[in-house]
Length: 260
Picture 1 (tube, rainbow, N blue to C red):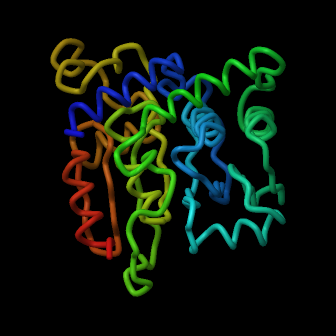
Picture 2: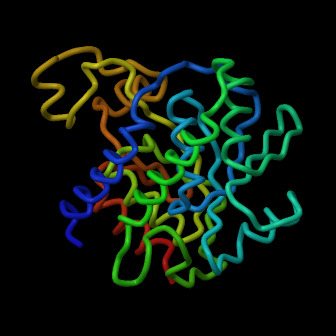
């Protein structure tokens, strides 16, 4: 697919989910130790957890576990006793949790509001819409972000995790998260959800029309102060002193730097 067609399909997937994972709904307190999420980008259950992380404005260390993965899947199985995803590890409380509904409840109750995730029929409908959204990522080689696509040499493993500014429903960010998963690259997901209705829309349209404050949430403020603009995805790789906007440029960088 071309980048624009890819982004259109990703937008359709986000529309099916009612654009959950777009706006910060409750600013959670940031824990001392970064949360760890063993994750598969294409997994519909993992998507539900990532939506909640965006809406709580929580950063997380993503440890990608695609099918055929050898880097983090064994680690996840050793921690929790089985290779099932998502798997959340919170070193602040010592909790290790499977099951997306349980993880969402835990995040909301510990770091945000005290409400619980939907159960019963609403839970079934939520999972169904997330599953359909995942299927829309079907490419000629399979569902993007579901399995290892590149044999990355061990010597190309990054010493430090990459950092990605993103929010779950962002169509251009999803392309980057898919590639990070397929390459089994660990990264700190710096959730950059929208904090105000003036943030809605593409950056060029938004900034020209509203001319409002760019730093409406924690990581959006960081981008505004340090890069002079607020746009996602934005990737930083301290291993190679690289930083860049634009999903297509990021994909080229990841392939040339880390793919085998």
